[in-house]
Amino acid sequence: MENFTFYSPTYFVFGKGEENKAGAMVKRFKGSRVLIHYGGGSVIRSGLLDRVKKSLESEGISYVELGGVKPNPRSGLVYEGIDLCRKEKVDFVLAVGGGSVIDSAKAIAAGTVYDGDFWDYYRTGKAIEKALPVGTVLTIAAAGSEGSGDSVITNEDGMYKRGASGEGIRPAFSILNPELTQTLPPYQTACGITDIMAHLMERYLTNTKNVVTTDRMIEGLLLAMIEEGPKAIDDPNDYDVRANIMWAGMMAHNNSCGVGRTQDWISHDIEHELSALYDCAHGAGLAVTFPAYLSHVYKHDTERLRQWAVRVWGCEDSGSDEDIIKEGINRYRTYLKRIGMPTTMGELGGKEEDIDKLAHSATCGDGRPGYLQGFVKLDENEVKEVYKKML
Ligand code: NZQ
Ligand code: ZN
Image 1 (cartoon, rainbow, N blue to C red):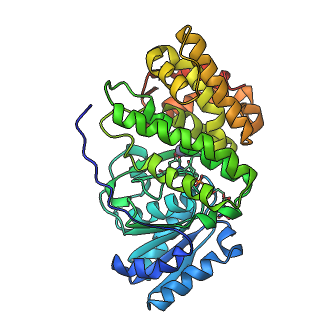
Image 2: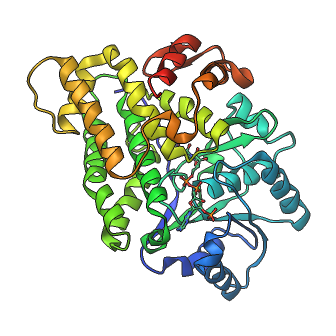
């Protein structure tokens, strides 16, 4: 295992009705003038936004609002949010929504206290050390942004989708009420589950040896998703199923499963090009990307992939590595189809003639060095091969 530091100070409040504590939590973290940030309207329709506002009012906390975050959040609204926070002297950003809203809130929080262009962080990978404090009321189990120090934004100037990270944007608190996820359409539920599994897989694909504890944590969470995923699709109102998925989403991405080991993240980089170009849901893009990517790279470490196929997908541990791994990938694809996910690029609106552009942007776009590096190193041509496997 490699040396690591792990600091994950987010205060989690989990369970039914807990959004009513939003005001008390903002107060606990010394917020007095809040930006409430939200998406395209689901939180208005569900009445959640009103409950959150009441909770702030009951603590005597004033607020301004900025809605309209789109899935795959854009830079334009971030700039608007930064201007608003400065003008209104906001000292706390409260995200009410999913990963897109939370990521946009984090970018606003960082940009408000930064002298330069907030995009510097996303273009250069420079760590975000300073930001206004961010709190979240989560409405979808998926991106894990409620517990992560990451944010992903699409720059409308060139449509580059890039991530930034830093301890400055790890949420001060996150309120997780699984009931709030019961209004999700099945497709969004499935996208979320697929993303959760992908976050676990990105960490499972490591070149570090002897990381049994985190291997077993990842396998356990993947098995939980294999068990609970179809149940959430079949009965969206099963509270306990929703609760198990919601906590897994946090565990999958606050990096407790990723410490002490190298991680991959090439599938995410390849997927981000799909959601940037076709504006598809990130989880759906991953359902198409991950099995294709695994088929391309499994030879890099057949022992690890065989272990994954046997322990996670229940493949019989006899026969050649290649056969077992291929069976594992088949079972993964079958599972994704079972929960309603696409498994080909065409289903996302993707076209073969876009492959050159996708591979170029993934490896060379916006300052990238000409390759992607993680579990393996892939140059532009190899990334093209991965996209071709999605057709
Ligand atoms: O905008 P509204 O009206 O709220 O609708 C949203 C949106 O259309 C809807 N929704 C959310 N909660 C709902 C609901 N509809 C009904 N009932 C509810 N309770 O669902 C749609 C998707 O929401 P979004 O926030 O986009 O989903 P998700 O949480 O999957 O976030 C995706 C974004 O996160 C990024 C992705 O790239 C993508 O841009 N990621 C962020 C990460 C991070 N910060 O750590 C890591 C991830 O790997 C990921 O890249
Ligand atoms: Zn993801």
